[in-house]
Image (cartoon, rainbow, N blue to C red):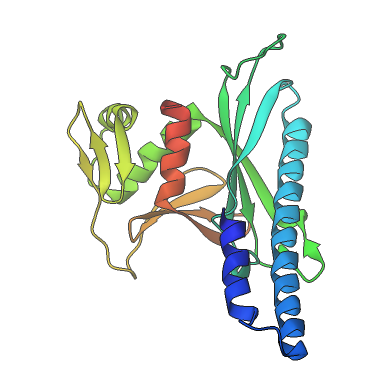
Length: 237
């Protein structure tokens, strides 16, 4: 649908109402060709990234032998911003081999943290992507630490109960059974930081989750919609 809309908009902009002037036709054709090339390039990049993620999983987790791997978020990155630091996410679920297998096994999310310059005029350089695999237990620990970074709540048990029964929203965690948790109201230039593990720090700023990668000194922001998608994948789907 996005591709169809994009082509339609370009057609309206570049294609003249009459075809009397050859220059107009040439310009329109060039514009459509450029848009088509950009779409193909992004699609190819997405396929290549998913293939690289699959290869990483097979190389680093040989114990996972039957699985589904799907892109959770890639299209959300604007093409003009893709050369900068960003995050690609994949949802993974194991299954048992059968005539008609069902996706009912353990779930994982694979983070692909990109670094500056991972995309250049020659294409994508996946050696500049840092991969990080988490399961529901690790995600709950991360979200608990994130809530403690973004709010005054300090009780781990209470936070986890609220996260399991609730939903992460812009201003905190809403719960149907426990008391909701409100996040700090910070200005755009205010940050709170918590050391999470040997690889990363968690950063709260402007109602968003930031992950600071110690190895590359990169700060990657995860959009609230991405957080909700991951949380729903682990606890709602």
